[in-house]
Length: 462
Ligand SMILES: *Cc1c(COP(=O)(O)O)cnc(C)c1O
Image (cartoon, rainbow, N blue to C red; front, side, top):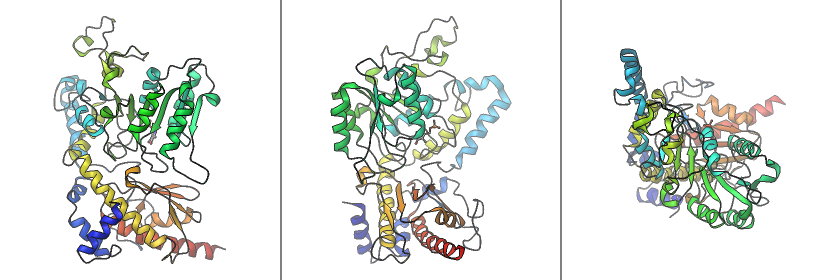
């Protein structure tokens, strides 16, 4: 059942209209994970930049729809960080082996939770570096171009960092990016990719492709790709298939092991709320545990029991543990642990169930207010994220019929925090972990007011 239908049913059963405020409040009152919002510091109107306190109440929560860019700060983060600072202050180097997160193994203390969230087996997942660095490290192994098979296939509008990583890896091996990157683009007049077109492209070009590397959830369109089907199709053509899960991890349930994905990388500061520049994650499938692929080595890849013998004879840890290079940052593991403690109070399945309804509600409200029929603002909004809930996560990407610069400014005045992509696109992501149905309700009002205010400014400005 599409969430829209489910929402209509719930409204009918309780005698509400989906569009009335009481319905949003009802949905929050029956949301089994509504209380998790209080595990986070939710920014107040008075604290966020650019709010106009003549338009909103200063003690009210802002509308935070930017968890796809930077997750909110869990309240427990301060405690976990302070524990590490205390330990350092009191015991110096001994902190490597003491406390809840002994720094020498602080990543290993939490990588099982990480593995659960991405559907990896223990030992298939590590925490290290940042996302783009991990992508490079995995490509050192999985992008080994030959005369006949030298291409990297990715989506046409891949995230810039990924695109630069692909280009530089290609150049590193002496190939030409212009002829070595295969871009998968949408059909004329469409914005998202059809799975059938991705599969056709793989079948058509696969024989010359060394590596297929797409994002799990596309940062711009919010499209959630069919990871198992695409992975299988790539393997059939003899390609390696890796995934950038920056926008997928903590957003949608993943089963990386069962899907047979070769490798994956992600950051943890988006839906996983570890704080800006948080420690990155990487997955290497068990089938590659004893691979002899080229890799870049450091002392942290050495087996633990003999690492500190320091005889300069590498005895490499198997699997993804062998890819670790430097000693991990205790402070970064502390912030991620704080977030994991909240994730442990729910499950990806429960988050996903709420997310489908929450984003479905947002979609319905936008269609009701800014679709063809009831639109009183004269500004049309087109949602170009797939309508199928299985093909998207929390995020919706909105394209406006007019430039959004002034509308976005007006949204900021009303304490709506989201992402602007000039000239006409706004990306919004109600994160199921801490956003409510009432946030969506308030967003719609603020958006309507913002459009009207922006149009008035435009008229007065002429
Ligand atoms: C957020 C994001 C990044 C950011 O990379 P960092 O190395 O963490 O700075 C890269 N790729 C994608 C697809 C992203 O969404």
